[in-house]
Length: 575
Image 1 (tube, rainbow, N blue to C red):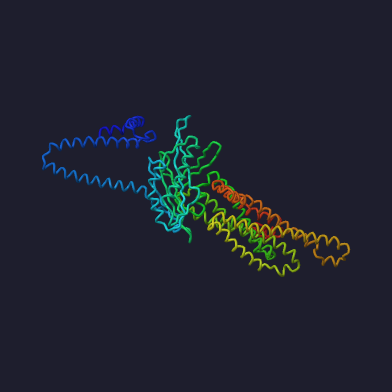
Image 2 (cartoon, rainbow, N blue to C red):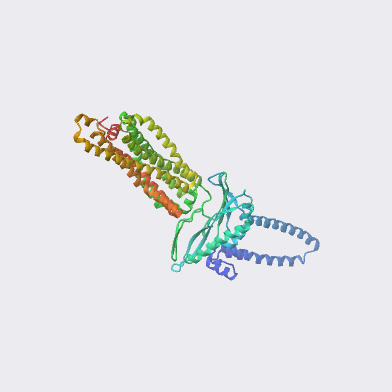
């Protein structure tokens, strides 16, 4: 015992020298506690051997009756020791058993974790967990899909500073494999894990000197898809060489010869629709969060206040209760919703994303609500702008019959239909994923764009035709005939002004929405979750800025609405 106590007082350098002398593997990377533990276990075996020899020597001089009593006591001690060893063995076995963890989607997703152990290389660790993973998969209702996500810790020594650098490698199988009742699970497991081991080896060859250190955790996740199948995903959470187990690891960038990659080592034990992959591979950074928060903070006040003034002004002014103003009110209401709901939610969602591993369920709930409202209000804006352009075309096409056919009540019903139809935007993004949402968005946007272009082209043709008729017939008409012509000067100028106003609104909409369309197109083409998540967050913020620009256009270009807003202001002299 005196030797063990002295060992506690030795320096790390002396402990490493002693470990090297006794042939302990990987002693150089061990911390002080690990070195003492390894040396203690070796010393304990030597002491046990010497004590056994000493006990045999003493027992040779003990009388038989006493020896029998001593033997019984020793047998009891041995049995107790066996029980302890058995419990210890069960604990070791239990370390490789998948343990169920909490998930954000109860009833739809089950996550199990297997804690990694120091001293296991990837091949040995995978072989050790194979029986438990196969047992877990075999217990599931078939068919299922299986995918492995494997993360390992790597270290290397910087020749210039002699310091140990740390890196994380994130590897996953190329595609999910379908498992049925007839599938050979052992062969499937070997095929998928061999692919992962090849990726680990490739990383070490191309990673500029990185060497494997250890595996810390592997989490098989079973996702229950409604009325379809179970998806099994295995993830590996990593512990840095001399620290504790971590749920989230900071971004580290590394370069390969002729290849540049950015790895974000984000592994979570929860799933939240498609947001999980975005957080794992493209979590927002502090700088990106500041950009999102500042841009939304600048535009949120005008979006709320100005759109509220427009809505109140239209409501309080009977002269503005026209079909075109009802459509404009629908657009202002969607912009008001963006300011009061969508913009605060995107800031809160981005803030929660920074702490997604600590509050997974709260992050999932906020991200889902934000996703629904932002998609819904954007859909309302798109359909409302299309309706405004169609209304201007109908006013020209129907002419004198316009007021009789197109009434404020009918347009209000159309607006209600627009708001209900836009619900599909929000639900498609949440329920069906970003790819189907992009398909829906492209189809609806394409239809609206065609309708708008055709409407403006038809308006241009009709106005040009009327202008030519006036130029030809004008010199021959009497003053009485001029009053009853197709377009008198006043109505023509007023109509052209309304067309220009709708064009300003449409151009502002297009300019703000183009970055968002480009971001979603980039995701569809590249499938890059890392950059796509960042592009989408910033581009959606630019989309929200349109809600603060629209009321400025209304008040700038529409004299009647501008006067009504002035009267609505509490400090206005025109009240």
